[in-house]
Length: 179
Image (cartoon, rainbow, N blue to C red; front, side, top):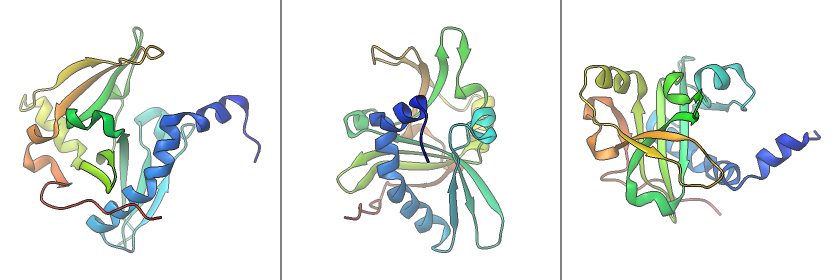
């Protein structure tokens, strides 16, 4: 398949390369949580689920039922923030994922020598309800990359109520990278 120039640029982006490199590690975590016999399918950025609802992947359980998810793989240099982040505005006039995000699962993980650490998998609808009930303390941030204009909302992983957490790295080590 020949990629168009924009697709080629997108796939050569360092953040995209990081995402592609870390997918197998995330898959190990999903299999650790949901069992080894799940099927994982990821959607490209042109898929309607990604465009309309910011959904990156589908996990099909052994029962045949599906879970839809969003993934955020963050660089080790940001680990000190220990946060779950969601794009708020793409730029000054365009709303970000905060306003369209509709997965059942939301994964955030920081790259480390041993895979991801820390990482968390949350029940996104429960987190949305907790926010609606004013149980969460989100913070506002601005992308510091000189080329990006996005703003985001973030919450410390430790401030996420346990009833919204499916699993997290606290108390156990995320699977190590292979190879």
